Image (tube, rainbow, N blue to C red):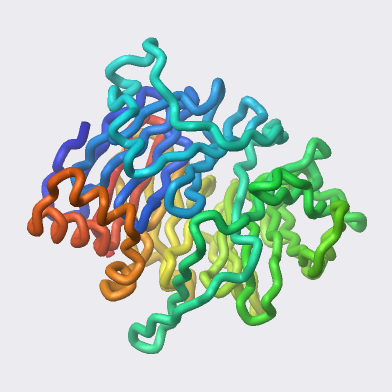
Amino acid sequence: MAERQSSALPPAPSYILRGHTGQIHSVRFVRQNSRLLTGDADGWVVYWKVETKRALAVWKAHDAAILGTEEWGHDKIITHGRDNSLRVWQLRVQDENTLSTVLPAEDAATPRPKPWLLHTLPVNTLNFCAFSACQEQLPEVSVLRDDSHIAHTSAAPRSAPILIATPSTDDKKINVYQLPEEQLKFVVPKVATVDTGMVMALKILHQHASKSILVLAGYEGGLTAVHNLPRGQSSTARIADLVYLSKPHSQPILSLDASPDGKMFFTSAADARVVTIQPPQKTTNTKHSGQQSLRVRSDGRILATGGWDTRIRIYSTKTLKEVAFLKWHKEGVYAVDFATILDPAELEKHDGAEGEVARRGNGLGKLQKQREEQMQLKHWVVAGAKDGKVSLWEAF
């Protein structure tokens, strides 16, 4: 269920999605911005169509809170729950017509059909840290230029193997698994020289310049570490190498993200600081503690944080200057995301066969197709909060 909001200033959300009763812990744009995943504290996942703001699929993915959601290729969804499991679901275009659209807010008791379950990994979730994923092989990168700023986009085979990073049962370590083999490939060890506390946030990514796979970790003690995964193949799990360690925060790190090219990292914590990790290191005292969710937009220009004080704040990645804040929620914002900045030519190029079949099968006309593509190209900001509401903003 969606509600259109006034466009009058000051900035107001364009839409409010009211499908959940539990706290929203995860929001993620997928399928080239045509779909939106939201996950809540009760284990429900709602798969929204962005064009109509209506649910296409609703299911209880976990028996405990959702920690994170992500897409894998064009037909799979990954969910991570506090029931100590990470699950991969098959959700193709043709599956959307077979699943329930009854929202948790309308009926939380009746069981729903679930997408086909492809993989389940037992993982540690005692520290509330969500998983992170990246392709196993460095993807082909196309470069879009916009006023000399470079944004990287990539296309991968639909079943390209991926790496999944999750906290280990030793909560100071990180395990990296490969899917679809479900094999433990790497272990990020605990830092030997200092007591970091448990892992609070992590990110696995390709650094394009070095062609390396890095794991960035934020810890309970306010420290940040970067580990490099060894290259080559091995039949046993290998140990990652520590390449960077710093203490940018005085309190536990709550969230982190990286620039699209992997050259800069950004952290937020229970203190009031937002930090850029790149020589020279920048630190901004925002005077707003508890910026829990941090997300860098795909063009690398801006980042967003969701705060305990109910606000979504937008910062320049270059200066860390706050350029805007968005306020609608009455309780803390726990999750934020940006729509991917898409080039219209790239959108048309990568519009796969499934999308064409779906359009023909659903009898969508030319005008509706154009409307959907217009929605995919919008610069959306989405936020989910403790109040169970999801806000969609078209502010930047």
